[in-house]
Image (cartoon, rainbow, N blue to C red; front, side, top):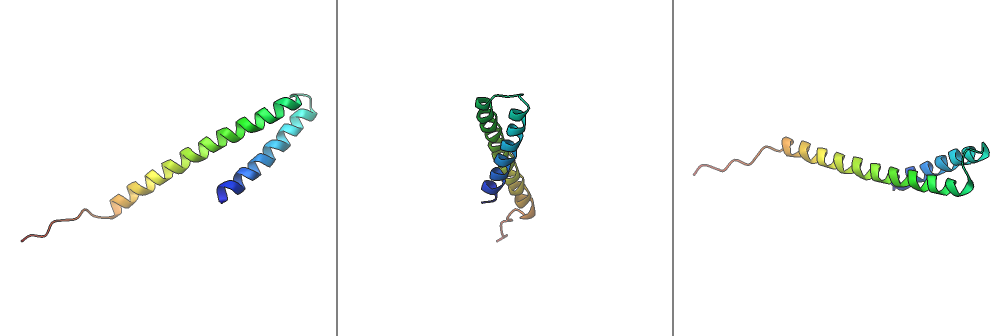
Amino acid sequence: MIKNILLGYLRHALTAAAGYLLAQGLIQQADQQILISAALAVAGVAWSTISKLLADYELQLAKKAIPPAVPAKV
């Protein structure tokens, strides 16, 4: 849910930035949608990569926290 909220904020920030560039004559209206879409795609890939790296890191920490099982001596 947080991902959707943050990506929504990012989309609005990108829309405002693209609107500014459009008003300054630096980009055309068709370019505005392309730039926003590309930036959101990059943000999605970055979010996914960071999420997976954090999950892997947490898994490694969990493995270190749990000592290996020692077989009982009979």
